[in-house]
Image 1 (cartoon, rainbow, N blue to C red):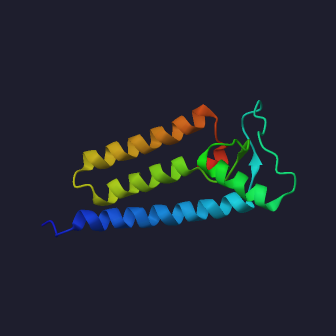
Image 2: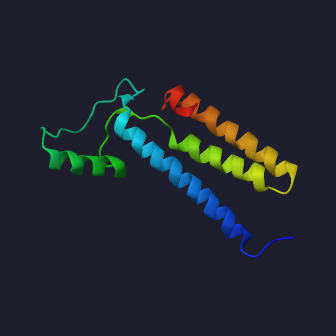
Length: 124
């Protein structure tokens, strides 16, 4: 039997897990930076040592307006795909949905590895 608001409970759980993962990802941005996997990448920013300018630049980097030419551990794409796969495996009512979710999640991970936009440690 379907409970009232059961879908909202599942959505709340998924959003809670994603918010924690992205919070951890934000912390990892602050403490771990590795060079970009793209050799032709050249940073397009300079702060000149000004703290206020640095904070403005961080805001622009978060919004995607400025490229930092660094890669950060860990991949948000992989985190999202993993959470969605486990959600389907846990809550799907038929094994075909579970199999589809698993195959789709694996294809996301393989595609991320093949594009070479992330280091493999970011994805693992």
